[in-house]
Image (cartoon, rainbow, N blue to C red; front, side, top):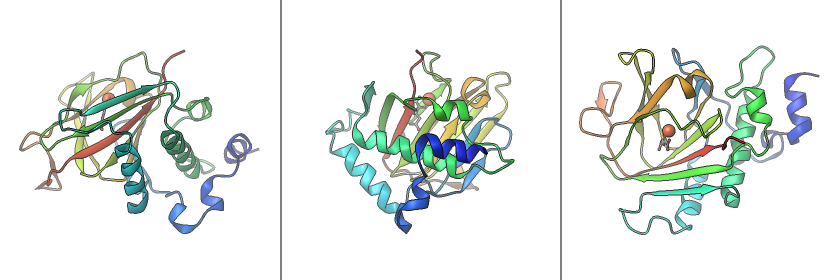
Amino acid sequence: MDEKAVLEQVFGQSSSDSEGEDEEVQFDWEEIPGVKGLWVSRNFLSPHKQSTLFSEVQSENWFTKPSNNQAMRFGDLPTWAIQLSHSICDSVLAASDDDQLLPLPLDLLLRQPLFDQMIVNQYQPGEGICAHVDLLRFEDGIAIVSLESSCVMHFTSVDNELVSVPVLLNPGSLVVMSGEARYRWKHEINRRPGFQTWEGRELDQMRRTSVTLRKLCE
Ligand SMILES: O=C(O)CCC(=O)C(=O)O
Ligand SMILES: [Fe+2]
């Protein structure tokens, strides 16, 4: 049985086979050259799905003033986050092809639950996150969904700080990191003036909301 058939037995048919056009899981994965294990899907969420997800986040009432900028959940995630995890799984699955690498390795994709920890960040213009490798208390296989404003996330090699790879995270995009990308590269969002340039142009900064999903180590 091929890989896709195994996955469909475990998860059922991916929603891309069964739902309407707007629900279709996009198949636009891009492997970032130079950073093994780093993949981006730029059209992961349609504009309609982005606004639905954003409303779901806002209706949690976590971000009632700008100084409240982060919410964390462990264990049981809200229903919308579980649905988001399923969409991530479907999207990775949709990339499976006979001899193509999957954006997330199969053993990570098959674990249950796929994610049991979530951080939602809401960054005002100018705010970002310092270079870091995610804590080792989290397993391999991390996903980040971006909403509202684009930003450039820089990946810097732990072994050679001079090597920095910029990745554009547009609203509706999904990033997954595993293996080297997760353990051997730091990621950072520096939104101070001069650091958010893409294709020679400084990005217009607005508020940015991100949903990061991870799995705690057993
Ligand atoms: O907000 C983001 O896009 C990244 C968040 C992150 O890297 C983290 O919480 O570890
Ligand atoms: Fe991180």
